[in-house]
Image (cartoon, rainbow, N blue to C red; front, side, top):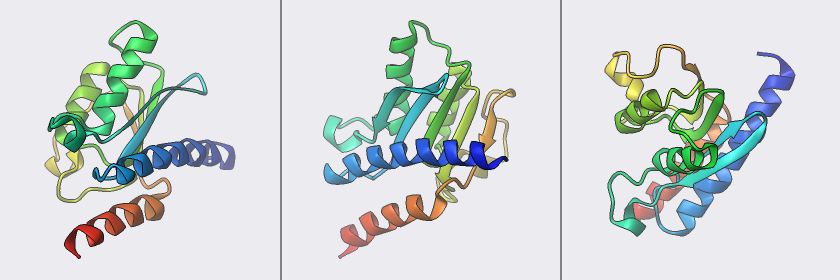
Length: 150
């Protein structure tokens, strides 16, 4: 990955982290994301499961809906999702059906991430780039859960 590409990924992951902080401030699990099309953020999302009392109100689901509305169609080809935590199986399935071109995530999720299933969950053409700003993404989640345990 070129330095320029790495900087772009970090720039958009920082926007996803801003969304995660919004979730944190609402006492939601701090996961945030943005969807980018042609170098422009077209959708943002953060977890709203507690606020909406809806187990499906994950950051990715919020952003997918918003991006589809913005584009005027359900397919997110030529789009990149930046998310602070590896998507769960539900979100990965939605991203498959949306035909997202690329997923860039921060921290891996050994317990709930889609990759632990060792099954082809994503669309076969979807590129995945893990570990962008991984430590910052992981630290925010750890801080949140430390506070819950205290």
